[in-house]
Length: 94
Image (cartoon, rainbow, N blue to C red; front, side, top):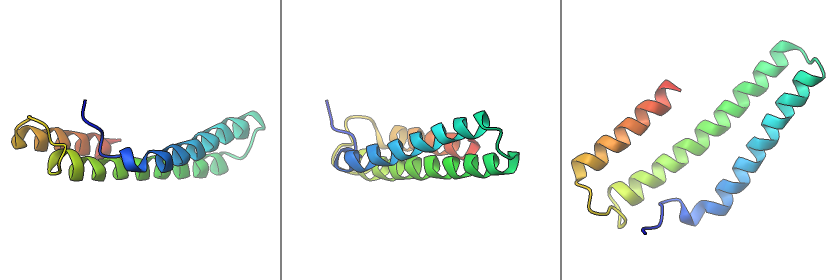
């Protein structure tokens, strides 16, 4: 099995995701303690931006490593580009 493009950044990505997990748990606590709606929405926006940052980093690693880099496998370039384009479209819609 080929290694993913993010393998060198795995520990850092885990750390970022743990911070995001803490933010999401904080959202739950905010709702439990009846915090002001706008404060909760601001925190949701921060979590969303943090997740988008992780997604963009993973996408960048994928493009560099799996689409054009040494781990591109046997899939034709056109298929790799179509797969990456579909992933970008999903990110844009989210």
